[in-house]
Each structure stands twice: as C-alpha cells, then as structure tokens.
Image 1 (cartoon, rainbow, N blue to C red):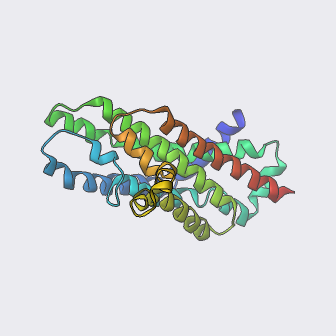
Image 2: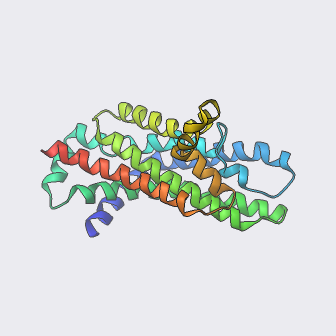
Amino acid sequence: MRNVRVIAKKELASYFDSPVAYIVIGSFLLVAGWMFFSSFFLMERADMRMFFAPSPFSPSMLLVVIVPAVTMRLIAEEKKSGTLELLTTMPLTDTEVVLGKFLAAMGLLSVGLFSTLAYAICISSIGPLDWGPTLSGYLGLFLFVAAMVSIGLWCSSLTDNQIVAFILSFMICSGLYFVYWLQFFMPQGIAGTVEYLSTSFHLDNLSRGVIDTRDVLYYLSLTIGGLFLTIRSLGSEEA
C-alpha cells in the first residue's frame, strides 16, 4: 500500500501544482450550482434530490464530461512520454500503478463533489432539509464517479493520445448514462435489462434515499471491472 500512496500523492500534487485542479473544481461548483439553483427555487421546498437525480441537465451529467477530462492523461501521457516503461521497471506492480492513479483522480473529484455540501448547508438554513436522502445522494454520486473514473483509466490505458482517451471514455460513460431513457422505446422483454445496465437508474434510486445493495454492488462491480481491464491492458503492453 505504500507504493499506492506514493503514486496517489504524486499524481494529486501534479493536479494542485497546476491550474487543472482549480479549473476543474471551480468549474464544477459554478456550473453545478447554476444547474441546481435555477430549478431549486421553482420547487418551493428544501430538497436536494434535483441535485443528485440524473437528467440531461443535471450535475451528474456534468460529471460525465469532467471525469473523462480528468482521467484522459493519467496513463496515456505516461505512454506517450515513455515514463510508463520506467514505472514498470521499478519495484511497482501494475496494480499499484493503477490504484495510485485511481485514488488520485478520486481525491481531486471528491474535493469538488463534497465541496457542494455548502449548497446543502445553505438549503438547510432556508427550510428543514431531510439529511437522509441527501447523504444517500452523495453516496450515489461518489459511487457513480468511482465507476466512471475506472472506465476513464481503462480508456487512457488503451492509447497514448489524450484526446482519443477522452473521446472513448466520454462515449462509454455517456452511453451508460443515457441508455436509461432508451428503455421507453424498447420491447418490454429487454427494457428491464437495459434499465439495470444504466448508471442513471442506480443513481436515481440512491437520489431518492433508497440504499439498495443491488445499486451499490452494481457500481462496485463496474469500478472493479474497469480497474481490472486497466491492469490487464498494462500487462499486455509489457508482454
């Protein structure tokens, strides 16, 4: 675990030593706040569900764009500069490299995500906020981000071009996000399967304050699957 912490600390420092972290966090807070509060005052109740619930015009959709932008360089840049080969010759395993980079991306995005607790505190000062669904919603967004980061890492491991990595990751993440609404145009027999495969379906459940183990397991499976594919991709590069 020491090697994982060293890599995570190095990557996280590289974010905050450059304008990247401040641009990502600042942009997310501003745009997510505008998306949420532009509809919040129309509801006339102290509720955070619209912040968490998936829709084409929500903070979760914003994350579908931000996460690929954060993860696109993590491995692709190492491959292009040749430092990935240097890493693999050091006493580091592929698993340690992948986990370190995963934790660094999660650290950056978590700072932005949980900074929005300021919105919840502001709303609770306006009216009685139900903290149960609010905390469940944050759990859902955290798991949602973890799954997308693992997908972004995998896409970054497939190429040495950051733009290609971004496009691949965005296509997969947005596909899993928007397929939720395609179920309404599909035959009844496959609509349920399509619904379950969507990240939006599970996020919507958690945004209502329903913590179902099936939703948690879905995100954990997607996260572990993405990390596993990334490790395998690095292994094939060395072979």
